[in-house]
Length: 172
Image (cartoon, one colour):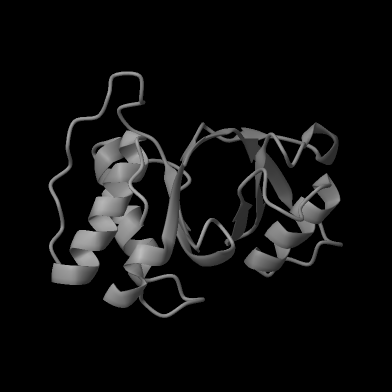
């Protein structure tokens, strides 16, 4: 992993490295005051300069007492529990690129309120829920964003479902 100057990315990187090498979970450090004290976040892991997704786990809202604890929890989960990928092995650590997306509170939205470059989207139908982060390569329209989020939630896009949008601050 290339060391980052961003405190959230550094925390995610050191957490993943520590956990994969020794199974140690670091204590949550203090963070700069310009970061929110608590928030949902997603930790995304890519291989070599963002080329290929290797793990991504997150929370829509805060589940931990601090943002630092949220990053630690989600970094370990992204590295070891993303059901799409096997757990990261020590030999892979040097080739990983990490980002942390801090989520703002979701708000109800309609299709015409969406902008996939600016807003992430959450779709909900009953107990099914799907989320897609904003500004993803290859997702250029609101319809495509909704289709992918519905697919993730196993919701038929032709049926009725609730839509929420949210902003993120991406730390890379």
